[in-house]
Amino acid sequence: MKNPNAVPPPPIRTDDKTREANWDLPIHPETVGRARGLVRETLAVWDVLSVVENVTMVVSELVSNAILHGKAPVTLALYRYGRIVRGEITDHGTAWPVPTPAGPDEEHGRGLAIVTAYADRWGVIPAQNGDPEGKTVWFVCAEWRSR
Image (cartoon, rainbow, N blue to C red; front, side, top):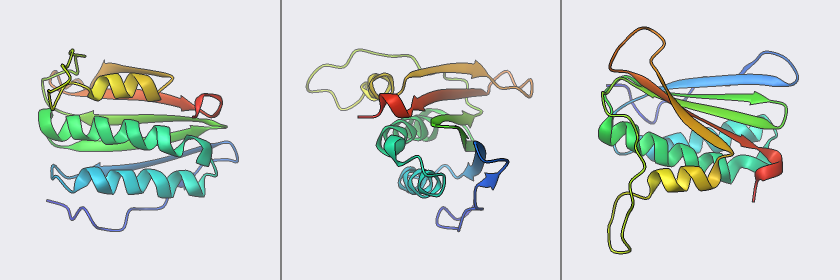
């Protein structure tokens, strides 16, 4: 298992308007906090601070889901297109995210409602390597939507 506190590689600059960064994440409870830190650090370098809170909230929920319901390996990828950030969380589990209603006293079931509230769009696509068990949950947060 990789150390969740290892220093991540810096974001890869591809041009002045498009950037990308990605990390392999261990299946470990500390990973969610580390993923939030990676988001904050990366978006600060990319100078898209207006979407930091939205992207951080969405990544936190989706990485939590991948750790709880998915299967390793788990990856987090961020892409910046001008003032728009797209995120992708990939895992190799069979369970796909399904929104469920949660009562006021229930501990679980609100994660995808939070994703819907903080992202402009989100969805799920099958793993691109032909793995029938894998999927990528993607989302988009744009500067004009930030709170």
